[in-house]
Length: 415
Picture 1 (tube, rainbow, N blue to C red):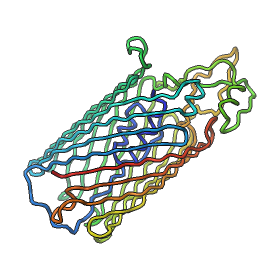
Picture 2: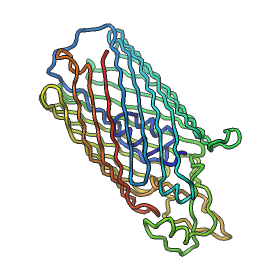
Picture 3: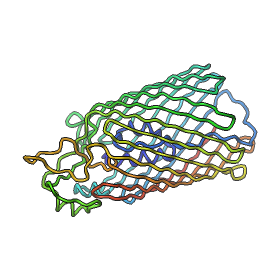
Picture 4: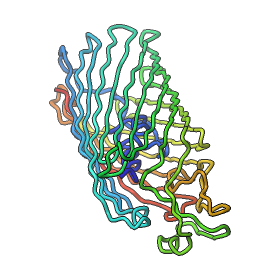
């Protein structure tokens, strides 16, 4: 099912294991927009530089786990790799992940469904070439689960200016998603969604220790993003349904009709990401991110993210992570939808609380241990991240808040 996949992608984005733009284009377009991945910025190292090599080979293994108070659990192993030739200006990279989801959330209980376990496979492949000041890149990704297929492809051109103190980027991508039902061929039942995205951004070196960047995204979607399993309870006019009402109370108050979710068939998304990273001497790094989001469904959101990493000795980096996310609801959001004249259904209806008003607060900690030899300590890096996320739903039937944890263990190597 695709009921709670958005929680996983948001969690992995927090750990920097997936790209947020990909998460928003992976079938989780209803999920609230999040910040860019929080991979710490490169920091000056007091270690001597490694000997030059014609090829740089990077490999990584990550294991991420997600759990929340709504009985959703996710286990995700990930492998990544990159080969690059800095002299020739080319690189090739790829990743593969598997996530196993086990869920018995209130939404599943409300539909009288049993706990389910599902496996999803996803892979990415990219390449870039920049022999001089002008370059380009291409990328592709695919995600497959029993009832969902998603793929995207795109490219970008970028150029260096002012002696490489400024970089401009322009990109385009296209995605196609098909949602169905488990054990039912897409030829029998499916819903498709197409998206086209434009990206423009730039990075500016402000001084030897400070880098600033900004990215503008515009995504245009066409198709039906409604979830095939999400049923929306309806109520008689005048029925009072309190926030956080139990499944049993909703079952007693609602009318017999319970139609499937129906979302608008088009959506235009716009976002701006701003980032600044600063290195304080040789001891610490601060990174600040701000993301502003708006779309044609009137969902407005802001995400503020801060990470501070401190060098502890020559081999350790430790630091806190804070994030605040707030959003208003889409314009067709209602806590309790009512039947119309002649028992007609509302034309637009949703049970996705991630489209309602909410506030999210994240507190986290990152630890990096440089295991490489003294001449090149970052040749091997063991990392651990943990984030505690509390989300407050301001106008939902079943939940008023959700507490979740995202934990990641990673091993990175330069071979």
